Length: 165
Image (cartoon, rainbow, N blue to C red):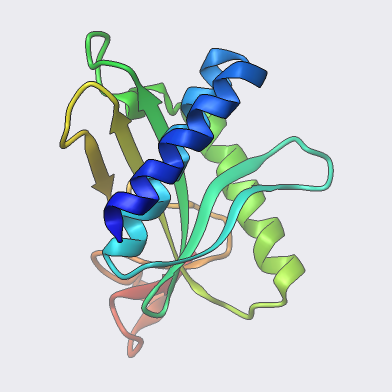
């Protein structure tokens, strides 16, 4: 069945290349591959290309991984000649992802979900060109409960893997 999804993704990509700018088509192909990759690892993708109403912020993929709500940025490149794709994620991009995540949580009515921010790199030239980085960054000061190494001093008695910041 995996080969069928790969074939359909390839057909979809070829159709997009004819209608879209090459960079946009490649980015969507990377998102397709990341989506399948994460689902094969047990994550349930619930949204793709979630945008805030103003259109100023976007999250590529939103998924559940067990009890964690995961916001995923997918970065893709043809080669790693200029470094890994995730090097293109700066502070401004992180802030926009966090803003979109807060909007998503508010609009869906989820109360205090445990969240995580992951990054998936896709390098098209390599057959094993997908890398998943869990907990790629933390939403400092955003009001989320998130997975972390240790709880802050004020969180005594709570599960140390989950803290609110």
